[in-house]
Length: 528
Image 1 (cartoon, rainbow, N blue to C red):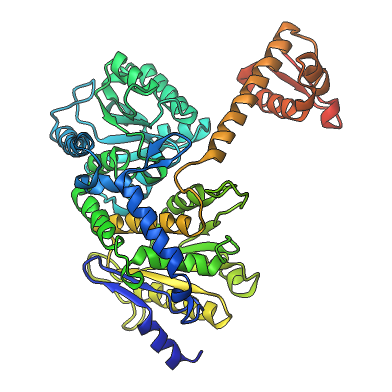
Image 2 (image 1 turned 30 degrees about the horizontal axis):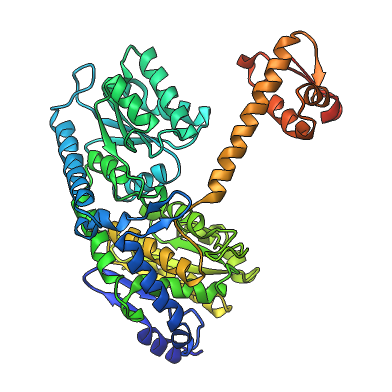
């Protein structure tokens, strides 16, 4: 296709909405003009499925739950008055609590203002808040955010070292819907121990975001934490960023959560349109379907040309891959669906994997994210009449051109600037696109059986660890190889796992297990 033809195609298939400040260019996806007509029945079904979801049907069938993250941005759509009142009162309570913290009405145990936030969560309870903090944070934030987003001791130590003496003015948010998420519980216990070693009562610095009557709720209530915010069972972790999960840390940081919610709500309204080219989420979902043949046959590469959006890819990885990566479809057929999502940021990608994208295996499609406004103030020239932002734009356009010229497909999402409204729009845009795509391929986007399977498997590993350590301690001073230990505890089929468990335990000097290395794993011995 020559440049004149491409220009015509660009204009024909361009989505632009000045109210959202959003443009989507799909001209460099090589679908033919019959594509949209050929898929009308599928997308019309997706529109109906989305209407049913928002009406309050049971969408998470594994847990018998509704899926209502859209109501968070417009409580009038919630299916009953109780939910409407809870949504509105929680939003109000978030703003009031953040305001009281900022005004010094709520102080730390030492009667000094809180200046830091430590967010303890995992998955959606961390990725969404981290993305917002990075995208919208400023040097003069009212509070500085830190995160425990794993159960890695060294990672937690690093964060605590960064906080340092500021612990006495650090407010900790513990976020877990079930209240029993192991990684979050571990982070809470580690943080609590550090507060106590510093002579501080954790309860005077702690806030919970959790389900009513969960284990975390009970702990926070019994120990007298500062307050508790709800995390409803009808909000999944990966779509929780516009609940207290994301809005509370954002409000404490000083981000305008009213504007963020309005952006998401405005996008929700537009993506309820039943006309394809007036519905940006439907456009995205259909491009995903076209690019992957509805089978995940190509990867989705997200390339935001803006440092502020560097965490957007990680956020989308969870949203899209946890929602779409399913073994079975709604009818119970084995389909092994999903789309792999990865990405970097421009122009870092120029020096990373653009070489492979252009010249290597053609097993992907790209979404470029362009931000038109370079910075808040004026830019200096780095060459005659050329700024650093001009180079950023040039590298984006050059990469887009280079990929298309070698038969690599891409689309471009353009926003005018990064602000709370725009971030709200982007969150809602991809949430609904994910839901539409799930309907197109007939899978349930709102449960996660694979995640639960992984959690159960981890529990089995901990059980094996306890058995192996009990055996070694009961026979202290005597070295045994993994095969002997596995036979002794009745777990011979798990010998490799037992070997790896003890290799880890023995590599930590405070655990009391000695390793005597042999020439092979089978000859390596362990003793208490």
